[in-house]
Image 1 (cartoon, rainbow, N blue to C red):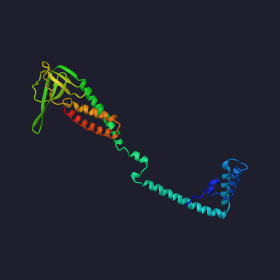
Image 2 (cartoon, rainbow, N blue to C red):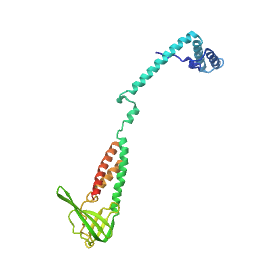
Image 3 (spheres, rainbow, N blue to C red):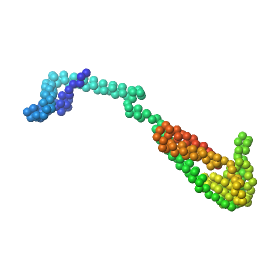
Image 4 (tube, helix red, strand yellow):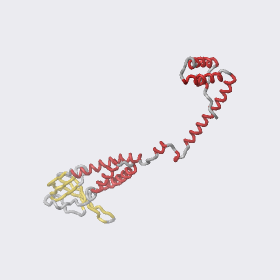
Length: 266
């Protein structure tokens, strides 16, 4: 259905305007756009439209027929607009707007952002581990006051020995691959990290080559795990691809869990 001209709009009136209001509006606009008063090129066309609108709205019969036709035309156009909107809302994904396609273009972006948060934490934690190793403290000529040793067994097999030492300068514990000959009142030298308390070496004061702390720790032989976790987390922070960044974050978290387990056992 063709959309009718809105004669009320032409005369700057509402659809409920009275006959007197229609007449007043016509006179005002006719005076404004009359060719004798207004010589602009558009004035003639506007003046003709004003006369056309007034010719319909000033006649009660024509006005009644026009109002009925105009209302039907308005309802038909409103219904068509609603159907079009409903069709667009139920359009399948592959026919969706470009904006929606853009939103769903990179499904890893949301997870990559969260991964960067965890990666930054892992990176700084591994950095602290490295600094802890580099700034270890040494205690020379400390006397052993008490020693407790425990066997760590795996399937009835002694995996390693754990020793808890109380000395005159510091209390510490370490792992060894075999039972050692440390006894109370021995004089020893200890190299230990200040943050996590990992013993790097423990040897008699008279023999620097004999290291009692020869068992595993987070620093030996698993240093490469710290460096791998640090590298993966650092790369996840700066890589451009969201998918690659997410994958690196997952790798860094897995390595971080392993590092935490070994740190607890050290």
